[in-house]
Image (cartoon, rainbow, N blue to C red; front, top):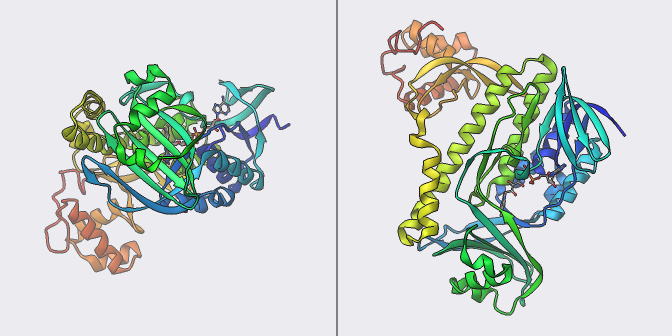
Amino acid sequence: MQSTADVAILGAGPAAIAAACALRRLGHSVVLVGRSRTAAVEGMSERTLTLLRQNGLEAAARTVRGAVERTGTWAGEAVAGGAEYIVDRAELDAALLTDAHCAAVSIRAERALGYQSRGALWTVRTESGELHCQTLIDARGRRAQRPVRRGPELIAICQRFRLQDANCSFTRLEATAHGWCWLAVHRGMGWLQVMTSRKAPSLRLGLRQHLAAFLAQTPQMAALLCGALPLGEPVARAATATLSAELRRCGAQRLGDAAAALDPLSGQGVYEALRGAHIATAAAHTYLRTRQWEPIGQFLSERMSELWERRNATAALHYQRQAQRTPTEFWSVAAAQYPALDPAHARASEATSLAWRPVLNGMCIEQRRVLVTPRFPRGVWQLEDVDLPELIELLNTTGGDIACASRHLSRPPQMVVRAVQWLRAQGLRVAPDAPPPAAGNGIGAPI
Ligand SMILES: Cc1cc2nc3c(=O)[nH]c(=O)nc-3n(C[C@H](O)[C@H](O)[C@H](O)COP(=O)(O)OP(=O)(O)OC[C@H]3O[C@@H](n4cnc5c(N)ncnc54)[C@H](O)[C@@H]3O)c2cc1C
């Protein structure tokens, strides 16, 4: 069994396997240490399915069922109709391992017990021994976290069912006075997920009784499950949104739920795990080439803070809407907790300026000059293929001459015009019909 590798990846979920396959495709030796164990059914959007395919995770994509009709009520209003895919996580995770095999990832189907750095190398302790690597990705899910921020304390109790109508397929979301629930049905097989506070009194009665008590609050959901046969025992899943402490150590990073586990209401956990895998791949690839961790660590840290704030802001809106309709303890506490996590969105006051920041360029993380705006506090360095700081400077020095900027940047004038329109939409006074911003306000000033 391989005991040294360029990259060790801990975990066997979507984040770990997407990163492992991508790093293999870039030519790195990869050892994945993980055993999958998620027994659940989850919903997926079209864009998550697209990402699975774009990551070459074809076996995994084939396990996705649907799309099925999505309905429900939230804050007393019908949930905007649409479609949702359904995935059985045991099937998905088994297929992910098939994809990893096909990508020639070396797999150790065992638990990782811990890791530490020794000089320039990392040592991973596993159930069967040690593994040495140059860079490490911890993608062991939410349980591997050391949380520093927490959303409302939530727990999901889930039950599988067989419905009487073997042909029906749909998903439904319902908010009640004391929580929310999601039912996914595909060809008569159902999965009910009931989300409440971890302190809900009915939990003390036992999981079955808790489900029954919850269904009594939602006649629509109870009617859909009328005559359905429960299969197996209910299971509990920790569901509190949590942000982990950063590793802050050269060459090691957390990925997916191990970095930030989002509120399941977002339904985008797998999507963010796959998107994060792309960034983690670029980070490991860049580190193996440059041996410089500082810009990579800064990039990962800023991106994670932004993701956490953005997703919590969305969750806060949903919880606040429902809290206005049913101001019970559950909704009031949840609605108050999310905004409190990111007080006043401190960074939103960031002034518009040019700055050097680490950015993702293809599969490399590198320092670039970026345009920082209140809306884009991490900065934007290019639009389509136009370097924005360079464009701003050209517009400054030529009095807003688009043709001249187009020639200097070797980009078609239409592309430059679109970039200029975008800059103006951000509130920047740039060409064509506005004077260039004065030097000294940050824009166009020498960097
Ligand atoms: C109740 C609930 C409902 C959700 N519903 C949805 C939904 O509908 N749609 C959606 O997109 N997302 C949903 N999510 C979120 C989604 O499950 C996660 O965001 C996603 O699975 C994250 O992927 P990951 O690879 O980071 O972690 P995981 O999928 O958790 O994978 C971690 C892997 O690491 C393995 N592992 C753990 N410890 C060790 C160890 N010591 N050594 C080796 N391996 C280890 C685990 O067995 C697992 O295979 C939900 C989450 C919850 C809690």
